[in-house]
Amino acid sequence: MKVVTFGEILLRLSPEGHKRFLQAEGFDAVYGGGEANTAVSLAQFGYDAKFITKLPDHEIGQAAINTLRQYGVDTSDILRGGDRIGLYYLEKGAAQRPSKVIYDRAGSSVAAAKAEEFDWERLLSGAEWFHITGITPALSAECAKTSLEAVKTARRLGITVSCDINFRRKLWDKDTAGKVMAEILEYTDIYIGGRDQAEELFGIPTNARNDSDYEAYKAVAEKLKERFGLKKVAITLRTTLSSDENKWAALLYDGEKHCFSREYRSLIVDRVGGGDSFSAGLIYALGEGMDTQSAVDFAAAASCLKLSVEGDCNIMSADEVKSLAFGGGSAQVQR
Image (cartoon, rainbow, N blue to C red; front, side, top):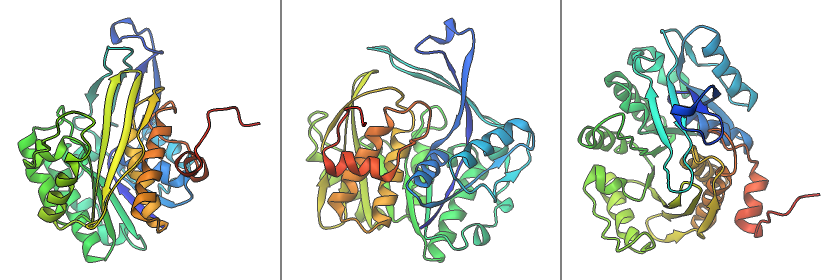
């Protein structure tokens, strides 16, 4: 299946290990970003994954493209130009100290790109699925316009559209985000969001008594589906025990059944990209025709495994995810 994603790939700079920014004497560099991470993961699952963005026409922009190519992502329609690649700095948390992110992405090539630079009729040609997140529309008014035009074109062409809400408070306020994302969701088939985002952006209360009150999210999923005319609603249910350990589960609602995955208790190597790997897992599972229960089980397993991988991207095969999701999985050495 051919999947197209659109967004920004950034240069991520992190102090070595779990050092704080103030202790850093150097930074490890990797490339990643919400929609790019999803494309990389889908390519590992064997899908034809294309990533659309705009990058500066210099060596750093090329290095980002080379990373995507390394993992099998189609980069043939990435635009070149503009002045800079977006950056973000990541300080990995430990124990009760949370991770921290500092963005330096204002004026990046994709943020400054004009909507008319993207010919969505051509860029989506032959695609069966289009994926976007709420991060890209937050970058600029033009990015919001481009994102809306993309989902409108995909809907017109009969392409399935998935959207991971991915609300980032450091990029925009919740009122603006709610307004922009509500319009995008009118052209979306599959909603993906965290446990609190429906309430933050769309005023749909969860009424959950605690983090383990999963039953409360059934009503949230129903209200989201009804309000935006969605086909399916996925809600990720992450509980942060510490910076080193999370509990992870998910709900998928198809209009008839509410299916919950098993709950994983995961020690964390790198938590960035957990949601992106869930999106990729869900796209793959639904694309393969898995039923609702199997789809949410596969997607939750994919995101659980990502927490064990350094960097933004989930470098796991579909068979490795299936082993955990359906075969019980094992952390024993495979000999």
